[in-house]
Amino acid sequence: MTGLRHLLSAADLDHETAIAVLDTAAQMSATQSREIKKLPTLRGRTVVNLFFEDSTRTRISFEAAAKRLSADVINFSAKGSSVSKGESLKDTALTLQAMGADAVVIRHHASGAPHRLAHAGWVDAAVVNAGDGTHQHPTQALLDAFTLRRHLAGDADNPDGVGLDLAGKHVAIVGDVLHSRVARSNVLLLHTLGARVTLVAPPTLVPVGVEAWPCAVSYDLDGVIADQQPDAIMMLRVQRERMGAGGGGTTGATSFFPSPLEYTRTFGLDARRLRMLPDHAIVMHPGPMNRGLEISADAADSDRAVIVEQVANGVAVRMAVLYLLLAGEREAWS
Ligand code: NCD
Picture (cartoon, rainbow, N blue to C red):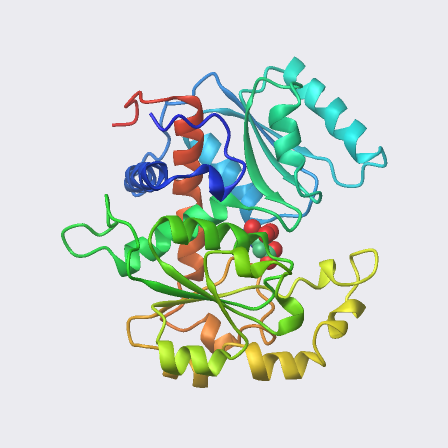
């Protein structure tokens, strides 16, 4: 099997494992067009969704994935807890252990929380990182890779590109890289799969140490689109909640760029930039979108945009991850 015990980072996925997850997701995806979508694979297993931070897509997607595999699902929304982070995580973990959780899907505002949960010895469960701080969001990278592979590597005989990687493809990731766990996970996984990645952002939103990442960096979106003709462009949300003092505010954003209008003019995807992309290029966004800031409505709703498809693919990818972590190689769904 894949040998995966937890999925904490895109760095946990070598080439072979990443392809195995994507190929399993393709099988899962095929079951999702059947009239009866539910598979018996994880009957009797318990998956806990432990969300310390807001989420729409990711939480619902993990819930749907676990339910489609017939697991029992417990949703634990820990937001608003006043207990100190370490204690609250430990106490919660001990409770989950007592309830017999087989997998814990955790989203936490603190980078490293899933790692702590997996390695502190509090739980026996498999731990899946559903986004920790600005650090990692590996299942987002997998669903993005699945979507990219389908569009850029698949063909009529092999629509999901099963067995293939993204060698030779070029993906531009544009916007608030500094605060983005999506960007960090995608850079790693896309590199593992052989793709070339260019990060495009204002200098204030490029993380310190980015030189060590396996990608190129540019401050010039028009130049990257016109000269490099990327096969895909992935727009990142401007994460205003991570910019204001104390979080939650919107006021801090303008200390990273002069004004929202200026940001949109320089780094937003609009109809003009859309027309400059090659005909086959796809437009991605992990959601939630700030329409009118990093992406215009006509770009978001264009026929190049695969944003809704990314959400659908998220369920298949998370089914694959839960299956591979919990059920091993049993071919119970076929
Ligand atoms: C992302 C996240 O939460 O990191 N969204 C998601 O998982 N669909 C990106 C974001 O919030 O901008």
